[in-house]
Image (cartoon, rainbow, N blue to C red; front, top):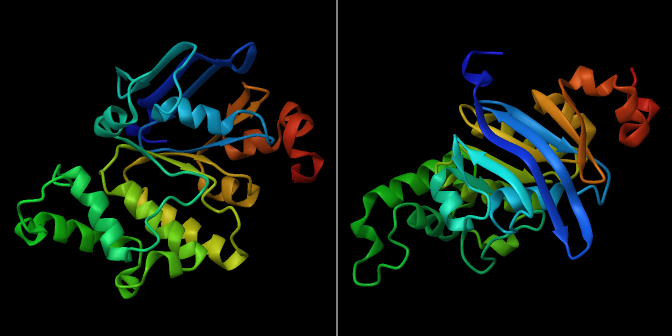
Length: 255
């Protein structure tokens, strides 16, 4: 691990979340190193998406601290957290299905440059928006699909476009929530390589159920069970952790 990766860019300390009397997140401690790809795994209902909602400002924390690059962000608005350098995707693809690929990406880029509400100037007056949109199309390999209607793309193409929209704000930290859900083996392989490419020089926290993806993509893995992190370590550490196998992975991953 490089010296850069030892710096924590995202930290959760003693984070708790309750809904009424039900405590869903029970004192989570988690750190994401700069430049690292880190997976958050666990059984259904463990609280993984809730953790993402807390980090990205969609839920308020009940207790604890979340810091992005040294700045506390718990209970900040999603817009403020995005401006501070964090972007996320969702389990359900979040696009404008009747617009083209290019138009979807351009709208995301316009938000980054603060011109999304500009109605008295043509968008052609902002060449930086066009240039950045073109760059994102190339980065996620959708140049040939730029004029396609987004709702008519294949599932994997829609996910690629959503990843590009996540990148549009030029984030330091990217959160991806089950990006490979519902994909074929071929689509999964393609998307893994795409994620490896677009996260170079950035920090990634990913929720994913496909253990082959997790073990091949990530530098470290944290295991969340019943709202608590029961282990964090390298893929080999997690693969051979008896507590993790009992709680989630099962004995079949012991080799």
